Length: 319
Ligand SMILES: Cc1ncc(COP(=O)(O)O)c(C=O)c1O
Image (cartoon, rainbow, N blue to C red):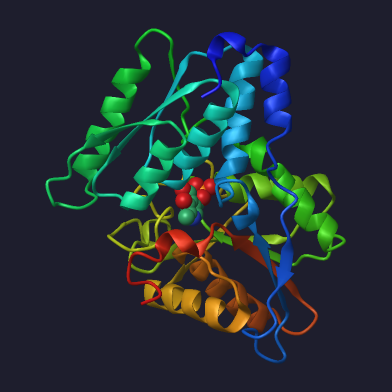
């Protein structure tokens, strides 16, 4: 980490401005979309520095906190996280001389825990005792983070409620609107917090583009569609509670996608489109293609390529 005593406002502003986040490509899927269907476009976020759209969130959270003086270089940022968000926060924290403590668990993928540590984060592990990701574990991890965040010089990043998140994702929407010249009928995406989807909607609307918006969840955890969640394998979405940022007035429609279809789509995206993506992106693409088939020729559907598939190579996704 940069020596905190040497990091003044000009330094951290320059460091944040130099982080190459955003301006990601919007690619059209050509091989997987059946004849007679509309266009399907994927906002490929894997090109961000830590390989996911969470880099936009990290820049927004940390930039906002520094500008307001909620934190200063040398202070500690605390969050509970299993992976992508923590890696993105660890990366930006290192750039601006903040310490970052991630409270996590051995229930999450080791590669994600290692990447947070590689960026200099302190990673505190709450043991899962072989029980997997349970509500009890999540509550324990969360309470540990809350307790650490009350210590002097510490600040809770609050990925589930921070008001800087939605505006941080807005450029994802403006970039899509610009790339498509405003021609967008439907935006669909799986939701964890709902921050990425709602922020992108804000950005699209700021460009005068008002598509129908469809939120997605795995059929195995149909909390939004039936009121009851469940266990599933699509990391990052359907986290067991109503997504705090999801505005159901703007997004009245929620659809489910079977996780087996999502995982199969990851394999097809890699083999047929040359795009190595993770499960939540597979789920997004399944729904986007279905919507493009329903809407028919001439329609335009977009969704998010959330992260790079490389971090899922250790599991059985591509085996
Ligand atoms: C891999 C992955 N996909 C999708 C999401 C959902 O994003 P959001 O929380 O902005 O709804 C997340 C969030 O953690 C994620 O890590």
